[in-house]
Amino acid sequence: MRAVQVVGYHDKLQLNEVPDPQITGPFDVIVRIGGAGVCRTDLHILEGQWEAKSGVALPYTIGHENAGRVEAIGDEVTNVAVGDKVILHPLITCGLCRACRAGDDVHCENSKFPGIDTDGGYAEFLKTSARSVVRIDDSLEPADVAALADAGLTAYHAAAKVARMTRPGDTCVVIGAGGLGHIGIQVLAAISGVRIVVVDRNPDAVALAVEVGAHVGITAPAGESEANGPVEQVLELTGGHGAEAVLDFVGEGGATAEGVAMLRRAGNYFVVGYGENIDVPTIDIISTEINFIGNLVGSYNDLNELMILAAQGKVKLHTVTYRLDDFQQALDDLDAGRVRGRAILIP
View 1 (cartoon, rainbow, N blue to C red):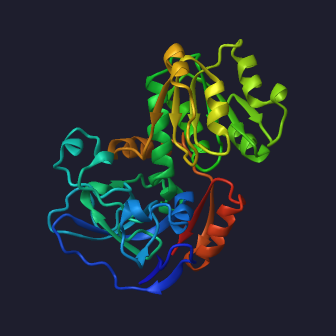
View 2: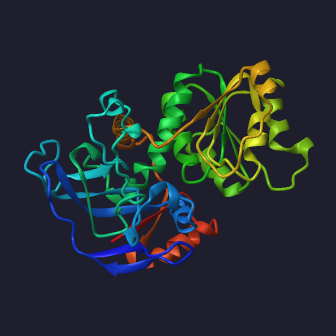
């Protein structure tokens, strides 16, 4: 089969011919990829940011947002059948450790992460496990939902926390309305009663955010004066108190300093995007009782719930599709900020 592989860090990906994956265990599932999301993490992988953490041997196949149709199953697989349309939870988990038994499989002690530390889905086929496949509604197509496997799942996981920790009428500021942000906004609109205020430097992204459910859109171009900046606008919207929640899908370029300044006393800062340090004096954290909450992907149950919202039409992924052969163009477009929503590779 054809597969796009990392052959060296700080180097270009290569499209190679590799052996098809084979069923070797009773709970194995092989999926014919119908769509693979192109994520900014893939750029970070090529930059070497994940080299020490993943410890993966090169070359390997990249791609951690995957959906398709079941091609083959092991003898003990009963939850899906050959031909079923499925989306893949990004982790292959053991089901036996303490985290898995608590339903917190994102923290499985024995997990594998296709596209990060083992072969992923920039390919024609991918091997995973029965625990990782979620059957999707017949109304959904794999290419249309593939990026929900990670970007959507991460956004849902964080937005669901916001929904549990806020009340109707509270304000949640969403920083970043790109690939993850526009999904998180739809989830908040579907499952919470918060007023959604979106902040982004791209006016097109802000317009899309309002289109999909944000109540207020703030365009914050670089270099705007503090008096007219997003912090002042958020404070004005909230009577000077700040927002009960900030959901940060950016996490770099000064976003965290502005996000903390937008936060109300006893507010919660949900960190999704990454790239810079959060620099807050501990006395400020104590005196205002603000909380910083990290978010990493989401559980199998989170993904199942997200697929229900997708089937109900409450969460729609805005996509730009590319052939597998055009993987480099997809990465270049993502890196240059030319992708509205999510880029999807289709073998």
